[in-house]
Length: 205
Image 1 (tube, helix red, strand yellow):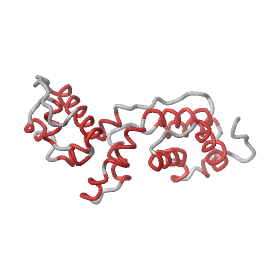
Image 2 (cartoon, rainbow, N blue to C red; image 1 turned 90 degrees about the horizontal axis):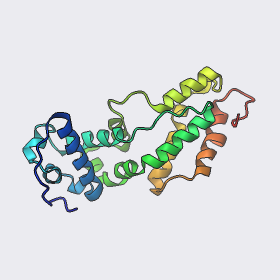
Image 3 (cartoon, one colour; image 1 turned 135 degrees about the horizontal axis):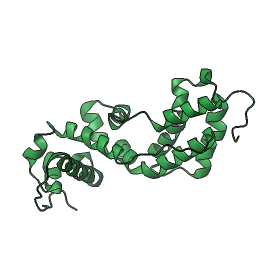
Image 4 (tube, rainbow, N blue to C red; image 1 turned 90 degrees about the vertical axis):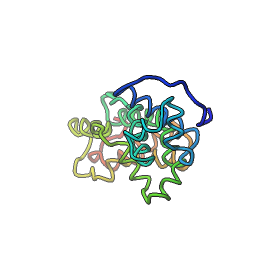
């Protein structure tokens, strides 16, 4: 759909209106990138007027931040409960692999103009995408594993905490393709678990 194609005007209010606006903004961003991401284009896509958007967001930077946070919220990842750290991590990475590719593509590829314009980085946008959300599923998984004695807390540094997800994210940003199941297991078994588990434990349980 062309961003200037007029949609029928619909009467919506409150949360329903804001969700419709953000859905329209995400569609425009995915289809036309940052260059085509304007209040006018989103208003047309949402079947409303530019002043309706301007009352909520001062400009397209603010609307972009809200759109990225909205897209992230619309892709919730449930906390796995396999009973083992290995199983939980593989399930988590698999869920992220399947549900976040489009979001990662937009943030990593289609926002180049935004990063150049503002000086923000991909890390800044990631923080925006997580704003207002509860503690991450990874935090819950690691806390449960520590209670079961599968992790040596002294080894679990801040950098190591996010290593599995960081490696998956790097793969997606570099290839724009999902990671294979075998590579996900390789991250868990040969990279992450040997670094954090108590000595002598088999990572496969």
